[in-house]
Length: 209
Image: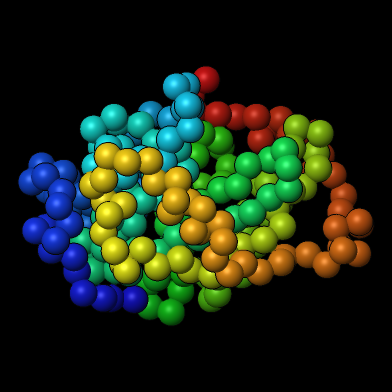
């Protein structure tokens, strides 16, 4: 999916920020860069940082990482799009950046866990891609929690998320309120089997403590 590349003067990004993101000229390089960022544990309160603020802080959580990935993909000439994966309480939702190679979807992901990561562009639909996260998504008691996925959320309608110093909680809320699709029926939810002990152990692997 190739679209009009965003120009540096429109983005508002500093030259060094632009050059860094421009150098990430494939989705794989974007993922490698996200992996190099420390994980943002929000020790001083909830954050929803813009791309510029993430680059200055050198840390990100999933939403912030997805914005950085979307910016780099936009500079490549790809539409900047988010995918929201919605869970049940007390688990946390996950946000990834979408991209296409030909007719196939992939995803770039910032996470602290050994799962919920990058997806190769081999999936024919958003649902197909989203379902690859289903069996990875469970609590420490084995309960599987993924319930919904969003339509691709287009970020190209404005560029404020690239450089603002303000908290982008409003953008996260807009994503939350965008159209979503249920993954499971009530019967399927009732019949879910818990993850095995070994799966739970694997799920406890993290990059940063």
